[in-house]
Figure 1: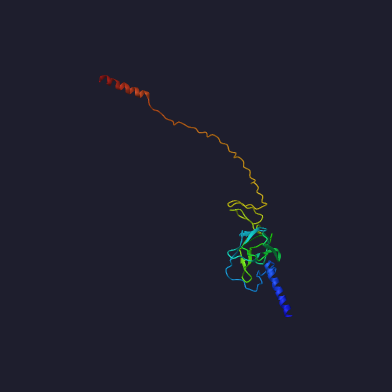
Figure 2: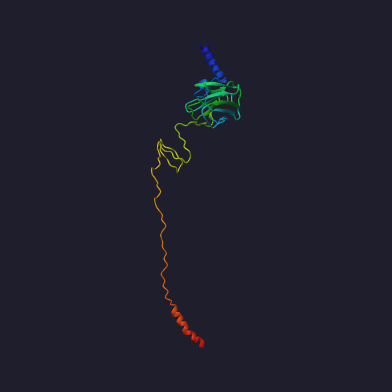
Length: 245
């Protein structure tokens, strides 16, 4: 009985080691921690996770790279995660990688052998809806007892292409309530369905008659009292005197 128990334990351990070597680690989808019987390393990881985009939109494709700074890694598990769990789908680009199903199809990538690796490149496609900010998160296995869990990229921010219930107004414009018209600043706003009628006023020319002014210029009445007879008398008086002189 004891021998049978040892055989069973040996077979289970062999199966587990084989599964980890070939990357079939779906049992670690949520925790992303290999069940090796050791704790994850708390040292600075010699590995990085990077992406070629710092933000994304619905359905966008992003290239993700796992890189070893010095020592290679034998195994890995990569996911794109938001606050709830794995999101999106991956596409592998080499024979040393494979797709896994973590809640949804092709939502994770792992290794296919325990050969040393220094660089892994894959592509990730965002869902077409219900997106939010994400991180690319990976587990790196250096050997059976040394591994790092939760090594992640910088956040990749989601940019909504059609923000809900947002109205964009032109610069320097004034927005008025519904049924109004938007005009530039310093303009006049007329409510919709308003009718502007011209003033019913009649302008008639002034019936005025201009008559020339009847002005009479009169010369002042001047009276000359010079008498020709007096002048002649004075001449006859002085004439003899002139002759004597």
